[in-house]
Image 1 (spheres, rainbow over the protein chains, first blue to last red):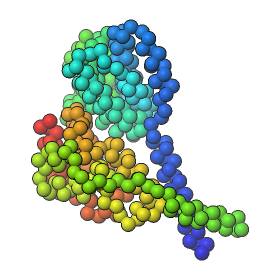
Image 2: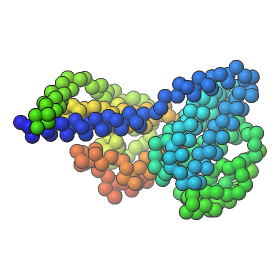
Image 3: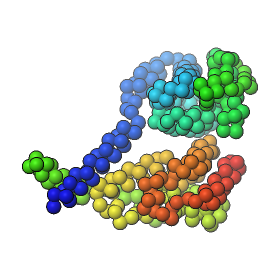
Image 4: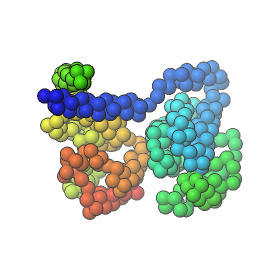
Length: 189
Length: 150
């Protein structure tokens, strides 16, 4: 009898651990952040639109820097931050075509940012590749106030691009193991 | 020792009590028009493979094993299925934008190639869900073609 009960105890302990894990994996509440983003709605709409796209870009560059530095933990945090900025994006000021394109981009990018917030660095980089494509497509519609450089590394996953604010190449897909791999393939104004 | 005995009894009682907690079952018997198999021309062997290896957690219908009736296994499964469907639901395929389809297909290829999917905990029980080298390359080839055509 006591062995059976002991088995039950172990069984329960294991399931509890699982429960905790699920909880930890659940996305964090973003109410606070949402509120502060809503405050910005009081501003002039067109400025607001640019500001939101700029906020996404800013998060993207911070995330890129974390990957350049091989910093898995920081990239997790920033993935989460970027997911919040993406969710706060509002495409309503754009034309119907642009709107649907932007919504598709944001939806896809949010998913990748969320994955980055809970993955190891190898997976973070895989998701960062598609995220970079999404953000490049977003910028093609929203435009950018600062000059951007599209950089390209022929070695990572059959050739992969990313965006940077600096002309100087620092590779987010390899980090310290091949920091300088890549070249500028396009300038975006 | 007495203390341990009390703990064991409490655990046993808890185990019995949780058997009465209900679980939302993932079951549906209609095939949606948005289903992956309806919108793509899927060869029969690939269709079978996907249904056996993926659909239990990535569609609206799970073929439940016997232990799904026992807690806490039922909760464990419920969570996996919920997460699996949030990630990818083959029944909802045509509702995804092309951009997301490409993302999903890309993830399928990566995870099948690396052996992350189907999950080991799933394969232990469902031996036929396991993808051998041959099945893997066949599936990846098909998914890759689908992705290139998008």
